[in-house]
Image (tube, rainbow, N blue to C red; front, side, top):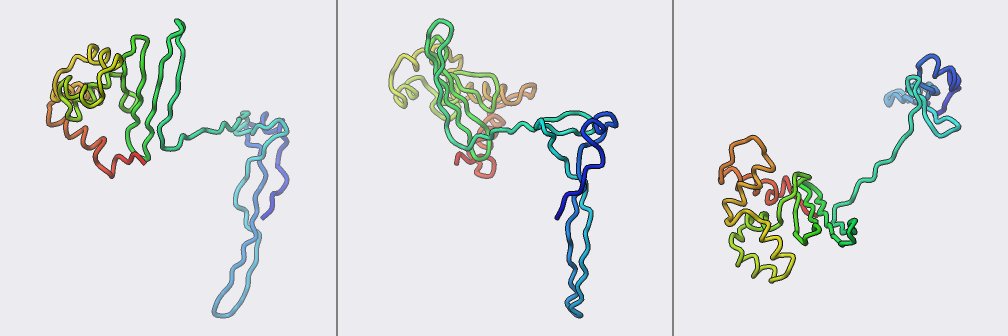
Length: 200
């Protein structure tokens, strides 16, 4: 392959509202198997944008810069932060191979919250209740009694699996009439269907 000379200079491209590019030509070889005949030709593949000396591109007369995007690998990412009052908080983000993100965070009052797929945060105990740990006692037996759990249970307005399911459904599907059955099937499809959710 080879790049030809650009048709216009960088300044001319800006004036004419065209792309600063060079013609890309590729040498193509066609072989006829029956006869063994070989045809070779340079084929024009299109105009290939060129980078200017300042590290930019000129596309349709406008300067453009390529910004690389960091894509996080599936995993759990932990971080700590200190608020303006000197109180330390923590966050944990679970990024699956496929499916909804789960983001956990603590606030200044030591309440643990969760965001499901970047929705509004809700106390993490609401999610635990929706998963079948309906009572405060079951959650305390599961996690052990501590200050974070006590504060989170105090902030939690739900007191049963059904209420927790409805609360989550309203966050994930605002405007739709919530029913326990719809909420259950939504939670199962979001987190327990291997085709839609893969934690890695």
